[in-house]
Length: 245
Image 1: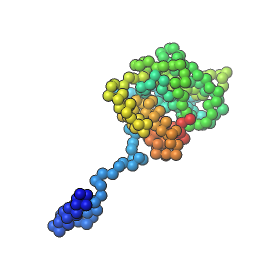
Image 2: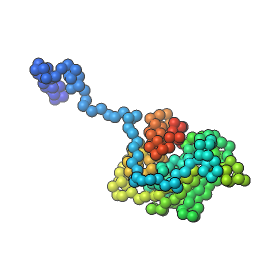
Image 3: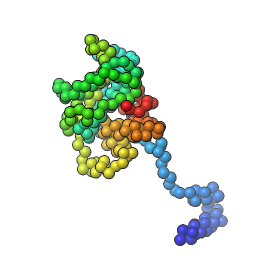
Image 4: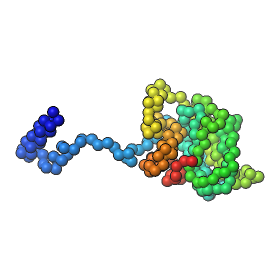
């Protein structure tokens, strides 16, 4: 059957050539598949914010905002959009960027209104690049619909906290509807970053692509996808860096 189809197709092509309706170059196109799979590197991770508007000054602040110029080095910046980012998880992973290796301790806090619900001090800020903290290693659980503020601070001098290098972001846990829940449940790890980004769920999109990078550290296309994602919310300074620790 397959050979008969090829013979019939060639006969039709020959007839069209005889009438001058197609030329030899178009024959090549006839014999090729009409569609080709999109190369992995051509797939873009497009973030679609859940809303648009003027960012608030509180939504993302980077650098040493307490007493130092934001362009000073070293600096830290939370990997959060300029508006409140979303997560579906009660214990999401928080990411930030550190410009230089430093011999300092650092501190991460999460606040609900005026109440501090998480305070972690770690002794070694260590290497530069994209860093992370998994909140599932703590007792905190974000409540749906509540905005939380989180801060990362490098501490140059524990006796002079006015010199801390601080960056602040905000996060809200949302509850996906039934349709999105089903889509997420059936999705592969490779597709998860794209689904989260499509639905404007920033923190989960960033975490999903970062986990893919950790699983496939030699796949440069994954790092390019994350770089593109970061640039879409103005986080250019955190691109072209090694995978998250």
